[in-house]
Image (cartoon, rainbow, N blue to C red; front, side, top):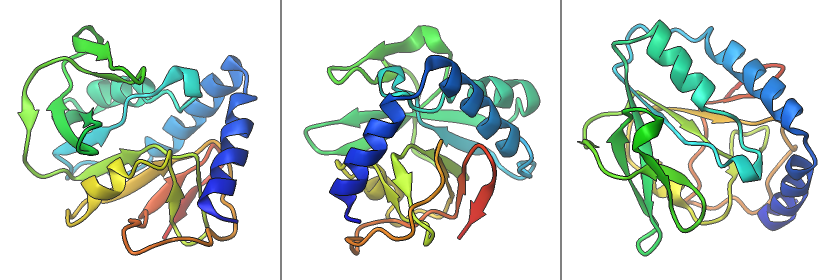
Length: 186
């Protein structure tokens, strides 16, 4: 299947989830993530969930990281839709977040992070058995991940498709993907 076909099917499938299913699946994702060895990590990038699109609740991950790994710096993205680039800001709590024109929570202001990132939690609609993902099609994460050394971890409520037919040279492959039932390693 092509990215457009997968995007349509996965978007419809995710929209059909109940709020309770999103909550349960998000907790299952966190349960698997919490088994990762993070002691050497200094900075983790966490995408902020778009609740209306029934994305995984990454605030659970943030709360767990703050509690279990208080020395890890958590950074969150802010998107520039004119350039299709992201900048990262140190997470200081929900109070500092506002919704942008696309209904995405972002830091309104704060401390810009320009250093290394040890792990990136990546949003997606779907992924394949080779570790490629389908997002919303704007390429923000592919551009962000180009040329940086980091552990790339996708979060998906659903199991992978066999193969994304139209992967291109700009698509960045995941290192791992967490589903409610298992962790895929690529």
